[in-house]
Length: 275
Image 1: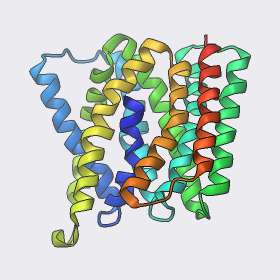
Image 2: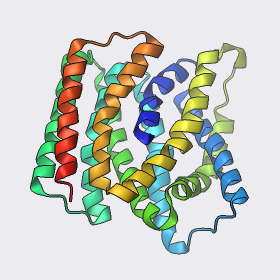
Image 3: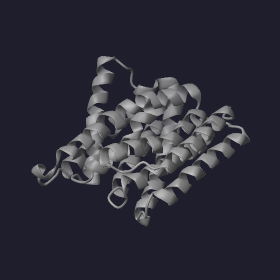
């Protein structure tokens, strides 16, 4: 469920950055999500994290609240959503690596074989069908994948003790003050120039990409293992491309279906040898 929700993030961001600046989009989505998170924490009477959790929450906020949204928004100014989506296929490998470094997981060697094979299939699909992406946009997407993988792994590790939705809520609260300042400083100069689609994109990434998706995702990673469950991200580019085709009227080729089947097999193999 978390993966499917995240699949709509890049198409929604692509629509939003057509009328909104990347800085405003990134900060506004964090502020809106933080407001919802504060209400959840208050209404349910959740206890505050201990001081030892602060470093992890800073890493999570830097990775998934600020880093990934900002880097992808900047990238989508120069590359298409279809081209950017396929980079997400590299996230499972990044998440698994950080799961080893931060979560103490030790997948079997065959896990790495299937994980690298799935990433290679996605990368090849990007080169063949993604179109000519500008180099700065590609580099921004690679950086986004790295910081997001770190944020996923760190959040999953902390979720085992705090709970999935609590982790993302506290990370959002931690980032609220600076994000609010940036949002106020980057308000659109002409509100009438912002279309309905841009506001819809902002609403989606604020409520679903920034909060609801993480409730399911961190819980799933904590229950099933960072490396094992993280392999489901290999399917995210194809769900994202379906959404991009539906929303942005981009064609879905037979090659996409064939590659999806290959990726599914890689996910099955990686999950089998994840522990």
